[in-house]
Length: 140
Image (cartoon, rainbow, N blue to C red; front, side, top):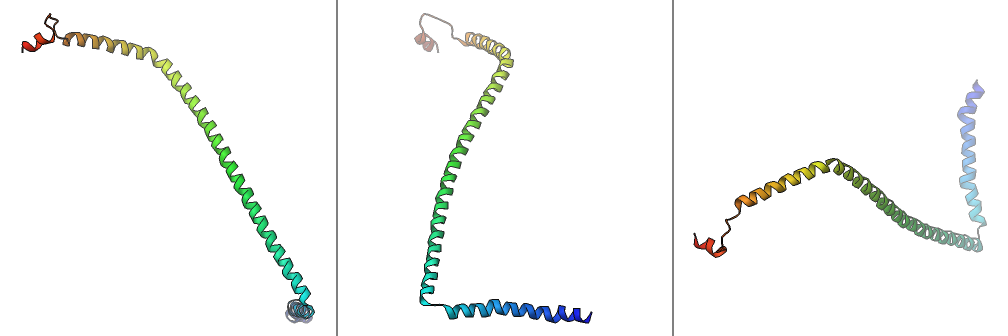
């Protein structure tokens, strides 16, 4: 049990520390010691190529998504127009059916109102005389 506690509390953290020291301190120091001007230029060239590639990919994706968005807007407009057309057809069919049900009543009401308008027009019409408008104004 004592060996287990020593491994858990001392040996493993020390081993982890040694590993981190070797990877994070010693390896970069060796790399810096081995670096030459030629390797620095190669690394800078690779970085520039990566940056150029990143810009090209970003522009291509921008145009690609822009075209896709434009196409999406055109397609959605077409779908909207087709749906509005179908809705308009459905509304016209419903109106036609309702008017077919109401048409006899509308014709009856129209005929009745036309009769009333003719009767009222006859009742309010001035008496016909030979003088016409001049005689009507002179009688006042």
